[in-house]
Length: 391
Image (cartoon, rainbow, N blue to C red; front, side, top):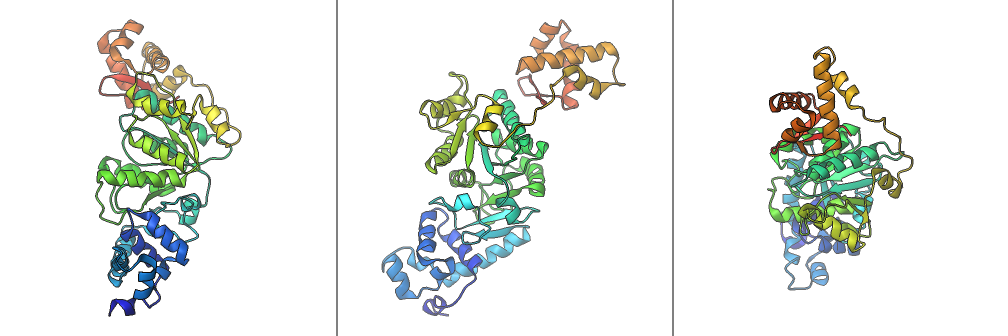
């Protein structure tokens, strides 16, 4: 079949969107302009040679890419995605995310993997992005969980969107899963793989109540440039973005700047002036690009999520008794409660410091800290710094 005969036919709109996504993945403004001008993706592939020359110019590098081969490759790509349990939503599909469609660099389509339908995922509640550095601090992780928890207790419960990366991203996803919020992970790989591999289990949990989303073809590897392309989808899908921690040149800053350029609400968590992980947030606040997050209650109010349901006060002794009653004697329960209370008051306190504060031996303190960690009441990092898991 000649190329001119091919371009005179009628083609499935989804296949055509997929083909445009393959061709113009890193130049989405071109595919957006084509669809906007011609009215549909299929109209692009219905052009004959003269029509393509008229649209692109006779010597354009784009004209030759609009071909039968591109459609055949797109069809094969859709089959692979379907086998991976995913569907493809083209930019002309009514199920395509409405806010993302407003962006000038929106992709020609998205691969979506979920137990829910695209309508349930994208046409549901508001979406709020929670993003930040991979090198998250104890402070950043705690506030990520605190903010997501607050949104889960709001009258209007938004979906939490992030990038499935280590650090702030996975903390946001896990906090959403734990609190019953829908969460959407936007990936920098094909829909048939998860990066990093340590998050495969989390990705499986996300697909049960939320979704994995990407605009990359199946088989795409996690190249550095892909993460920058991925960030525009996170920012574009959401009406608001929250930057928890980021260096001045971090990926979180890229997402924040994109959100600002799209005219979306932008918030940043203030941090210490001498903490490199907070320099990006502090700069956004100083330049008045982002509103400072001063409390979880204030954030919920600023986002317009309605009334915030109050949360019962956290009682360390009650938490310990609930976890260890019948397993420990009274003196050990008292020590565990004292340790948990000290950890809650002093975020990032070390085992050495705990031993000093409680007057217990290092060995006994370390043993009790291990018990608290095993029962999920606290987390201990590689530097032996302790934080409470329940705020």
